[in-house]
Image (cartoon, rainbow, N blue to C red; front, side, top):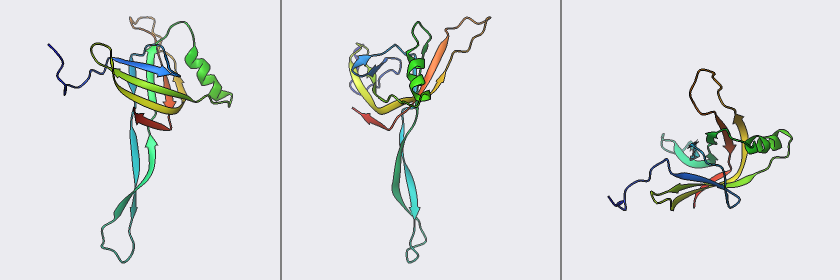
Length: 143
């Protein structure tokens, strides 16, 4: 059945790009959000209702999860933060349609790893070892 124009896209079809290069596959990406603080304000000669004006913009941390494989690029990137020489990157999260064509792109500016979490290891489990990296970002722009 052909896709209708107003059908939403599936959340399982996405890529992560950094510096124009596709990075490792990820099985989960969460936390893409932005918000603006509301500042309540009132002068004494006004009605008793508070005015709300736009304050600072904030962007949530993005968490990427993937199966552990050979190569520790997450840890290497995280070590730049530990050494005090933070390596900031421009990253895109790309949502694809069923034919794997790009449909939506979220551009993350000045991303850097503020947290890395290793896999949960359980001898009796039958699961993939999954690691995650949490990225602090300075903006999220729909591109």
